[in-house]
Image (cartoon, rainbow, N blue to C red):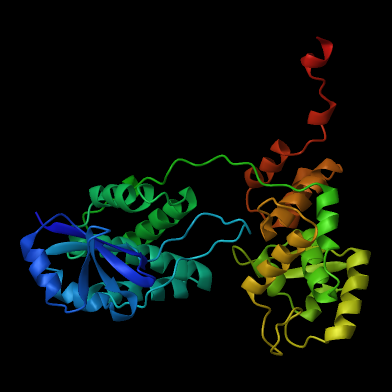
Length: 376
């Protein structure tokens, strides 16, 4: 049985490095030394290569017959940060074996012709690449369900990666082996992780008001306010064009959102006045909200920073994300008596079961329940 080498990024003596972890093997050590760039760390007890000297393709070419190389640790999605936004660890530019690259190209072409969104394509390609690299050099058509179980345990659960990331990986593997490769892996028996039942994070109306009024900059206030007032996802806000604000019908037209669906949301008169003030000041051309360069969308990370700055200004220490504003919009609508079916339409949910989760965070009826503790 081949040895296994686990690659993980890290820091050693103030240098960004890639650590190589494997069981003691004289043949492997001799091979790694021939690279000329690998060094032994006495403090870490493992081999490492400086990031600017690291070349995954050379490592594969040298060791593919001697060991399995797991490089999924070079690009992990971390847990939610204090800002509520996801980040990725430092990316290392690497190449991968040609046969894997060719199969990933087939997967990309298939998803593109099915009109998957660019973000979904990139997510699935990254997930499939991580799994296929884990099983390499085992022939793809020899991969089985046991390999998936092993990958999940060693590369997802052991590293503490999220339920949602595991679900994405399983979806990508199922799609890859169903549409691109036909092999020993039984897609129908490949189980997704048990669904988590987490309540959405919701802010009070007073907290929302503080956040929306935190900025004096009209563009920043308008972006955050429009997300809350229409229950928009971040991408939906940034994809809006000036013509999508229909002031005559008092609606916002949200085109080709998640699931390639169009929908409309009611346009608040307060928001309309704010947008007119913003438009007069900035005169956007292509997109409703543009960055410093005309005709280019406002950057997603910059929008996240706008929220982060607002939280600092009003001294809210909760790990609020932009999606919290959407959750708060739905919950506040429910608490004001809006029918759940309308909320489903406004949010663009395909299933009513998705929308029903807001009934579990609404405090309208719960606050009316008297605790028996009060009668003691």
